[in-house]
Image (tube, rainbow, N blue to C red; front, side, top):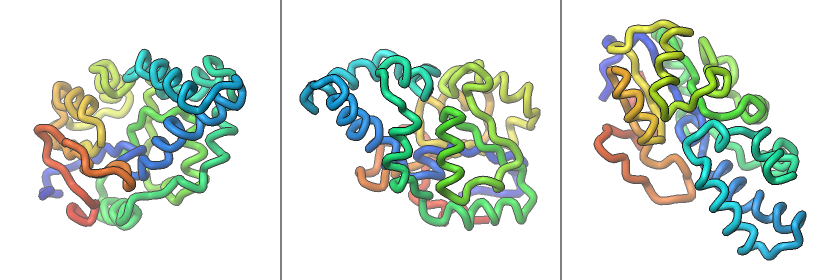
Length: 216
């Protein structure tokens, strides 16, 4: 599927791509509503409905991905709550073997993520992901999410690479479309970002079910 001799730079998303999105889905859709309900004296369903509405308003913006924003907005210690369920953080199958393989063939590998720095730190502590990347690029540091064209312009400026010889693997269609508009030459979607949910519609993009499919 991938002609590795045509790839110099590998751009990898984290949540849903390298890591199982089940942790994040459980955290935001179940754990936070439960703790919010307890703190506000609400029923679980009422708390969940309120939070889903608040999530929707900022979806696709930096605030949606910002741990500090939600700590302020909800009056909850979000980093602490993340640690309460961090046993659910898991790497997708074959990811570590894939990362070792691409390093062995000297491909420049960048982690490009919308995750907040505090979330990245937690996930690196709980997994063996750290140390496999030439650079870790966080959208909060660039001050624009990956869904926006500005992210890709800033990424290009901060970490120059040949767009035509770059491969992005991501589970977000909005991100893949933004990268395509910027001129990223090779794009792959993830079919099953959350191991507990059915495969997702990957739109017009080529996709993989497992990193074993594209192992160098």
